[in-house]
Length: 490
Image (cartoon, rainbow, N blue to C red):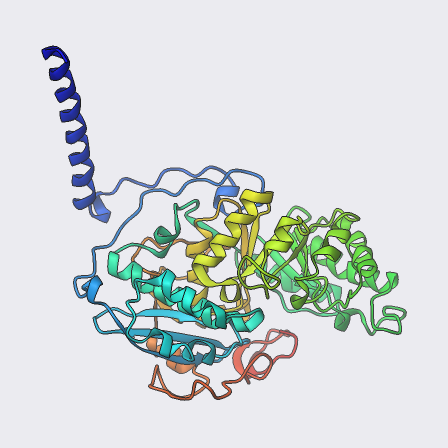
């Protein structure tokens, strides 16, 4: 090599070293929030959690927190796991993972689930470094299952990611991937009625709260008292589906035909393919965002039947809130690989929490261009965990809020985020470490199902209640009256 060539090589090396040093310097001298540039503009409706089809807008400036000075990551160990239960329409079992340092993680077992699903994992957790999240989750995965049985695994995932984010000073979404949106769109569940006019009025009340995406139930309870609505097996006849269409039409007229509207058909009793096809065709003219759970929440495994119905209707189909994980008969992969539905419907508290839900959604989009919606009937803690996941998804539609009738105290269960948590139908994605929220101890204690705020317990193997037996909770009933009772049409 000539002397000039050697000089040029050293010059290029010096430039690379300077650039590398500059990059490291930028990392270790991250400017404060006040010094950060304003967030860049977004890339359209899909980027704000809008309907599928457009490429999502990218997130703006990220505000990282400082590394937790009270933690020494290599010496961090789990010491305990405890729980409490908030009384609600579907009770919220919340867990707390304690460590030997001044850092802890919060998680939530799926709504109306059993906190024992998480507490029973204590022997597999104590003594482990919570930052070994993947290894811990792999160890407890054999004990997870479909429906509420996925709640323990999912709660542990959320709590472990909360700890990791707090230790390293980053939001949970940063642990999962790049931020695709700054806000997550919410869709509102609405209590049902057999009166079309009342249904429309209830949905208008949701719209006045700022929601822009709506969901209603059409069940045999709402049409079954009409003449000729059900056959001898309790399945809706064509006439019964017309009655259901009257409910949908009234809501459409009330909120507008351009607004996204979905229908939950889990209790419509369309047990056969032919009944599902008739329902899909009967509702085509209402231009639904999706028709949900034609075979009930537990019928997600019937991918062949969904595929047959999908081939005979233009109404988009959605299912999956009781499926756990990606692979296997209780997972999403058969639905995705066979393109049996139009949108997958993960419940963040069943599907596997943050990591597994993202894995499912990424697979669905990359393999078959199927977008994701998130079912959510949990507390704002569980909701914010799902917000972190939704923020990283390439094609995300919307996430449910199932607490509209007691939204005021529901939002007050947490601190650390700007109130109201849901504003104009969206939730802002936190940039603070971990989940970015903490429990409001005072408000939580006002709504406990059982006494005790994360008290030590060895009762993980006892019954903690379940779906439909949680007892009363304060809310507006279907007639707009503030009550403290069990309302049956939730």
